[in-house]
Every structure is written in C-alpha cells, then in structure tokens.
Image (cartoon, rainbow, N blue to C red):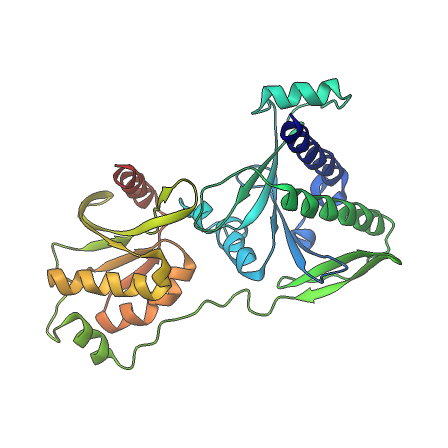
Length: 334
C-alpha cells in the first residue's frame, strides 16, 4: 500500500508540474525564439534543455544533456522523419490528451480535488532513454520536471513583463536559473549542436582493402541499400541484445525487398555499424548504389566510407523508405 501511495504522490507531482508548464508563455505561444530553453539546476549546475514543438502535436521534451538535445533536434526540430527516433531520444516527454491512459490514476486525482476541464487537458508523460524501451518517469524525473516547471513559470512572468530583452538565435538559447536570490536569466551557446563525428579511414584504398578487393563495382541490379538500424531486441526492458542492418534491393520505383540482414553488437557503437556494413559488402561482393541512412548522425559518420566506394547517401525520410522501415520492424519482431 505504501508503495502505491508513494507512486501516486510522484505522479501527482508530475501532473501539477505539467499544469504549471501549460500556463507559461512558452507553451501557450510556441515561437521560434523560445523553442529551446536551457534551465540550470542551481546547486549542481546541471542543464535541462526544454524543447517545445508543435509536430506531430503540441508537446515538450526535457533533455538532460547536449547529446540528448541533438537527438531531439534531428527528430523533432529539423523534422528529418526518423521512424525509429525514439530509440535515440533520451528525454522526458510531455503532451496532453483527451482521455487519460490510466483511468484509476485519473479517478484518484479527481477524488483529490484535481480537475482537468477543457479539451486535451490531461497530462501524459513518457520517459525515453536512449537504446531502451520507453517507460514511466521515476521519482528523479519528477523532481527534474518540478524544478523545470517552477523555473519556467518564473521565466514566463519575466518574459511577459518585458524583463527579458535578449533575442538569441539557435544555437544560442535563452537560459534561466531559479536560485535563492530569485530568477537569473541569460543566453547559453551550444557550440557543438550542429556537429556529428565522421569516420575517417586512412585512405580510399584502406576501405577497399578492408572489404577484401580493389575491383568492386557498383551492382546495377542491387541498386539500393537501406541502412535501417538499430531496431533493437530487448531483454526485460534492460538493454538491447542486438542491432540489425537490413539490406534492400529496389526492383522498381518505391518497391523494396529485404535481401539480407546482419546483426551487430550495440556496445560496439558507430564503428561497429560501419564494420558490419563493410562486412556485408565484403561477404557479398556487391556495393549498393544508394545508402539510406536512418538519421543525420549515421549519414555524417558513414559519409567518408560512402565517398570512397562511390555510394550515394541520403537521409531516410521518403515515403518508399517509410514502407521499408515497416518491413524491417516486422522482421525485427520475429
């Protein structure tokens, strides 16, 4: 019983914090100037990056690192159309719905005197962790959301009163910290937000030597490849067991067929992805004409390899590629 009371208190704290966030100018009037806000925790100095978005519906992300902000930026701010973007987002997600997903919790809140009048008024939270299954926020998350809510509420009052005069342009961000002496405001610059690491081989010959031949040619029949990864298999919602690379042949415009796939260890990181992709070329002796990278991070990392092998590289956000992603998801669940 005590565990239920503790969980209820934590979730109630999230609901009250969400209600405060919804009252702020940042939620009511989502504008480019305040699409990303940095909230600094006064004691630890840790930064929470608050991302407000209208797509696919009105929502907010609280990212706890620059790396997490990069993932949200690729998937949400730039709308690159990543079908499996949730696997890379490390953030607390807030939206509002018409119907609560948990009727018992909603009933307990109403009994506690908390009402949700109007359309899409019930707050819903999801905790995304990179390479993990989505889950409910925990007590630590609730504390972070409560701090963000208090800070944004004070910052909203400052903005509405005309007391915030800065006009930062991304990657400059409005920055707020709620300390004992009151609200502190300023501007933070996220210097590396547009940068992604690139795998740099020693030479073009080094890439060809790795795949075992210097005479490989692009195969006309095997015209297209889609690097659709990671679709992870999970064990008890703890860690991914494997990632997979799916190779496709394109027989006509918009028609893909999965011709092969290969597993790799997620712990190997992006180098493991590159090794697996080149390993497939070495195994088959076929170089695809096009590589559809699942996001900008993958495209940047593999750009030098693709240039060495004469492979066109594109971001996977076209309609035919969406259909192929659906095929990959079905295969990954088998």
